[in-house]
Length: 118
Length: 111
Image 1 (spheres, rainbow over the protein chains, first blue to last red):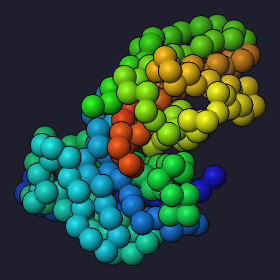
Image 2: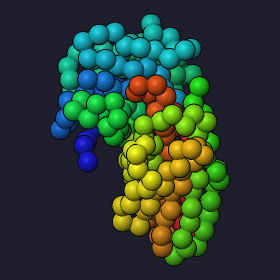
Image 3: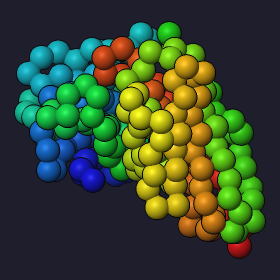
Image 4: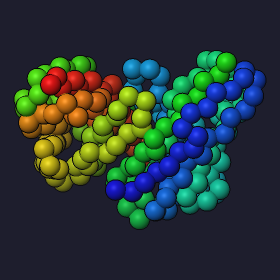
């Protein structure tokens, strides 16, 4: 199947710093990518929909100024956690759908990025 | 608003058994349903995608069925193996693109 790569797979940072997580579709183009957050032993919660060349669409309750999303190309979306605090510690997962598959195509997920804020 | 429920939340069975995981969703107007596997600390691996026009999909020892009218899907795992131990998630679209996930079933296969 298609491959979605996330980097870094884990990161530890000090409170108040910013952290950038990259999500790349390696063998297909993705007009839209999705960013999820997952707390321990819980399911995935959609944070935002990242649209290539335009602003991201954030879910209710997600601070857009804290979680900056940039989708500069058809294969790369980035999530920047600004001024991180310990409560931002979580597992962040991105997903992407092959643009050729339309809206009914299969979604592929990255391996996730574990953020720990000290 | 789409809601997805998975039962049971956890399941532990001996190796070799056949088992069924259940998923139900509240809005039957979906165009597909997807089953995923998640290993601890890892991302999601897509197992099966069932389009709304299909009733089931098979991949190896896995078989997923979809009954849109009743808002249900099942994932059947035949001849379970310890390597099948993981959390299994089902997800359906809400609107054009967003996926809504169930809470998952944590499966343990005992050797």
